[in-house]
Image (cartoon, rainbow, N blue to C red; front, side, top):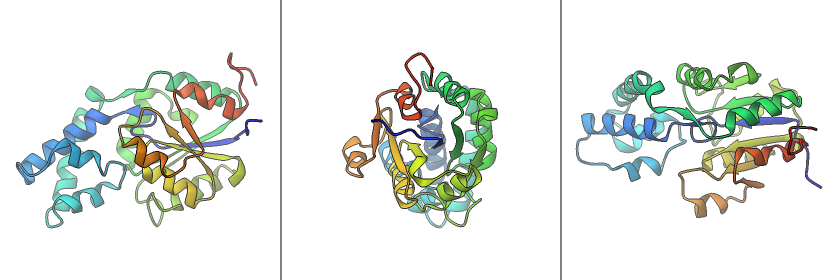
Length: 220
C-alpha cells in the first residue's frame, strides 16, 4: 500500500522551477568576470544546490563575496527571461493543495529570488511556509531547514516528504528523518543521486499524486 504523505516540502531550483540555464548563465557571467578562462559549465553543475557563498568559495575564496554580488545582480536581472515551470508542476501543486496537503519550500536560495520564482509560477499562495538561506542556523544538506518547515506545518516525520533534485535535498531529508523523493528531471548525476537511496524517484510531477492519496483524476 502506498504511504500517504500529509506534508510535502519542495526544493525550488531544478525541482519546481526550471532555472538550469538561468543559474548556469549567471555563474558563467560571474566566473568569466572574476576568474576568466578557468571554469566550465560542468564545474558549476557539480556543486549546484549548495549555498551560493560555498560554491563561490570553491572557485575563488578570496573573491567569493564580490562574486556572490555579481551572480545575484545578473540572476535577478535575467530571472524571468530564463526561468519557467517544469511541465505539470503547477497543475500538480494545485491538486495537492485541493486535497489538503500542506506544502512548503526549503531552498538554499535567498528569499528575494525564491519569491520571484514562486510568483513566476503563480504558486506562492499554495506554499504555507518558505525557508530560505540564512533563515536557519545551517543550510541544506543539514536537516535544520527541513525540521523547521516540518515544525511550522505541524508535520510528523513519517508523514512528511522532502522532494528535490540534488544530493543536498536528499541528505537533508534523510538527516531530518523524513522520506525523500528525487525528481527524474534533475541535471545532476543520476548514479550519484540514486546511491543516496531516495525513497522515491519521480518520472513526472504526477507521480506525487498517489503519494498523497490522490487518484488519477485528482480525487482522494
